[in-house]
Amino acid sequence: MAARPLGRLALTHLLVVLFGMGSWAAVNGIWVELPVVVKDLPEGWSLPSYLSVLVAMGNLGLLAVTLWRRLAPGKGERVPIQVVQALCMVGTALLAPLWHHVVPVAGQLHSVAFLALTLVLALACCASNVTFLPFLGRLPPPFLRSFFLGQGLSALLPCVLALGQGVGRLECPPAPTNGTPGPPLNLPERFSASIFFWALTALLVTSAAAFQGLLQLLPPPVPTGDPATGRQVEAPGVEEQEEEASPLQEPPGQAASSTPGPDPKAHQLLSARAASLLGLLGLTSALTNGVLPAVQSFSCLPYGRLAYHLAVVLGSAASPLACFLAMGILCRSLAGLGVLSVLGMFFGAYLMVLASLSPCPPLVGTSTGVVLVVLSWVLCLGVFSYVKVAASSLLHNGGRQALLAAGVAIQVGSLLGALAMFLPTSIYHVFRSGQDCVDLCGP
Image (cartoon, rainbow, N blue to C red):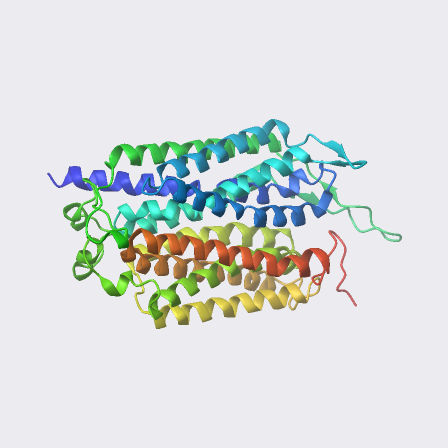
């Protein structure tokens, strides 16, 4: 008899992972495909600055979600989630045939289709944080960690797909005995950007199907307890009996806290503890989604394209691994999370120093430099991902309102981080890039 509940529980975890995978896969896919599309789009390498602005404008999606809650109070998150998923699927499906189309605007060619569809996808992805997370208030805390595992895959899988495509491969011509070396030879990709976007669409379709599976698995929520808390009855298939059979289960003393019941301390969103947890979410999101991605190329490329690709892929893999760790070992101490955040900022500060010294950071041209920069990216993103998952899990007992506040903190932090880096990277060019196949650090 125990096998069936355990199997249903494992299926629910899998569906939640696939559901979370669709949260930011569309925008992450566009970012990793930039080295391919910039070669054909008229904006060239100014395209990343356009994308930064469009992703910042995507926060207008939060206003649409707020308007929905005003016009349809008590309707839940099902319809907004389905709208977000539909926009992501349609947007990426249209990118596949239209991304390279350009039209004249004010006498200059611009990739209007690519930029417009990117804005649509940014609106949808930004809205996902304040719709997907509150929906998970219907499930016990371990499922929140499964969701963040899926969100980590939304960054990892597009990176793996881009590596299989062969993004950014080049060959340096042999050094001549005299004269200036020729330009680097860019190798063609194994498949086109259109095929990449079709594959990305397939991932998003899988995520949307997983959400429909969750809706079939979980009956409609029945409000209970204090309406102000937003707590709801858990659905059959994930009740306390099944949680006890799960290897991902909370400790017995903590299991009771995942069931609906009064927990005034957890429900006080204005308490010092809750405010600190929300602050940690905002800070880690600002660093991992705004500040550090803006300087990743400056910190890695001086050590070579291999170092850059390893940092991107292994750094993306660190997030799912941190979620796996949180499933088994969850830090519930605010002081402990603070210490971990300081540790993550130590690695982040090292990466910022490398970026500021680009194109000639310390240990450039050595294997030690490559190991240190890749390891710093992995540990920095891994630690911050763990803090984000742990803080969200501790806020889970506050119910839907707490998870909504967590989503807002994540999105606001990401926005502030992106805006903080836009001027130094795109306008004032504080960070300097190197040149492929050219040694700028020689004697």
